[in-house]
Length: 71
Image (cartoon, rainbow, N blue to C red):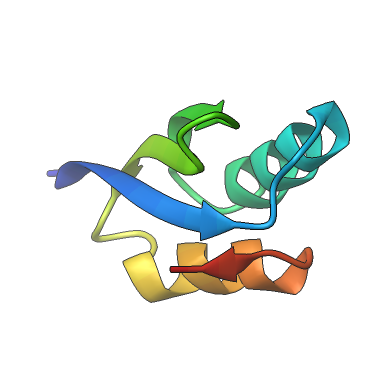
């Protein structure tokens, strides 16, 4: 049985559509991450994920790896 979790992550340094694409691609490449919505104005990434398949730390790590700071 899946354990779907919805979360909002504050991300520093996103400023353009390229940033949105990079963060979206990095997070959706992880297992069970879906419904990714990047809000440049608010500096947030909201998404759903199965916490049995991927950890929140792994998601934050993927964002960090593409050059953005998780606040």
